[in-house]
Length: 394
Image 1: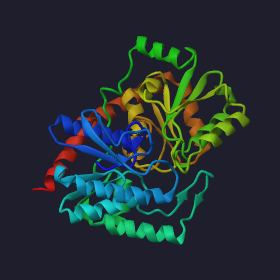
Image 2: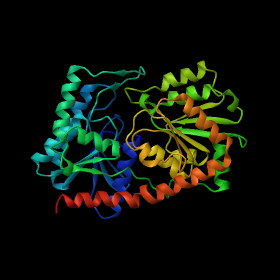
Image 3: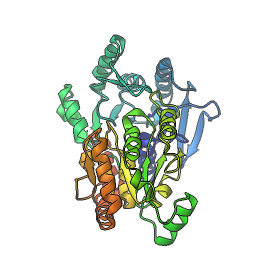
Image 4: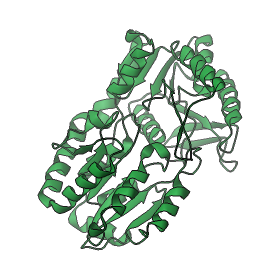
C-alpha cells in the first residue's frame, strides 16, 4: 500500500487503506504500508495492526517540492523492498509520487493498481484554495497534470470508486479493460447504531442536551467539503437554534485548502457559537455519530465519501449534496435526502424537514443502515479487490 498520509493521521483515504490492509492480513495476504514521515517524531518503521509501516522523507506540510522528495524517497524504498511485494496499490495515484511509483513498479516487473478517490482528480480543471475560490491551474500545473495522466494510463488497473469517476476516466482516454468500479467500504460492526443507554451516555459526553436534535458533519475542513454552506443555512434558520445544534467534527490541519480558521471566524461573526460546536479531529468519530440525530454532508466535489457511509451505517438520516458518489449511495426520499449542490435554500429546507419529522428520521435512518449492510460493508467490497489482485497474475 502506497499512501502519502497514514496513521496517526485521519482522513478518508487513510481509513480505507487501514481497513483494506487489516482485511488482507486477516485473509492471509502479506501486506505492508509505505507512507510519508509527515512528522519528525514519527518512527521510520512501525508495526500497526500487525502490519509493517515504513515512513520516508520529507516531514512537514504545504510545499509542492515535498511531493517530489516523497516521490523519490518512496521509489527508493520500493526498490529496496522489491522482494516483498507483487502488487503496489496506490492510494494517491494522481500525485507526483503516484506517477513516479508506477514507472518504478513497471521497471521492477511488478503490478500496479491505482485508486482514483475524488471526482475531478483526472480532469483537474480547477485548483481549490484556502481563499474559498477555484483558481485555474497555471501552465506548469497543466503540463504536470498531463504528464501524470499519461503515466497513470500505464497502470495495470485503475479503480474508480464512483460512476462519475469512471465516466471521467473514460472521457480522458483510459482503456475500458483497465477500469473497474469498486466503492469504498465500511466496517458496519464498528459503525453500528447505539443502544439507548450508550446513546444517552455519549450525548452527555458531547454535552448534547436531551431536548436538542444533534446535526453532525464529519470530514476534513477544506473548501470542497462545503461546510460554509451548512453555516450559512443554519444562520438563515434562527427559529431552529433552540431545538437543534450543529457539531462539526474534523480539522483542516495540513491541507493547503483548509478553511478551518475562516469557518470559526464566520461562526463568531454570525453569532452562532452557542449552536455550532467545533469538536476538532477525533478518532472516536463513531461515538459522535452514535450521539447524533441527523448527518449533513454538503460537499461540492467527492468520490464516494467515508463520512457519508459511516453515518448511514450508524443509522442516521442524511442530507447530502447531489454530487459524485453521494448519488451512488443516497436515493432521495428512500434512504436519505439530496439537495442541489450549493443550494443553501434547499439545504435549509431539508434540515427543517428532518428536524420537524421524527418518523421520517427513523425511516430514512433504518433504510440507510440497510443500504450499507447490503452494498458497502467490508465483507461485500474487499473480496472484489482481492479478486482484482489475483486477476493480475492469472
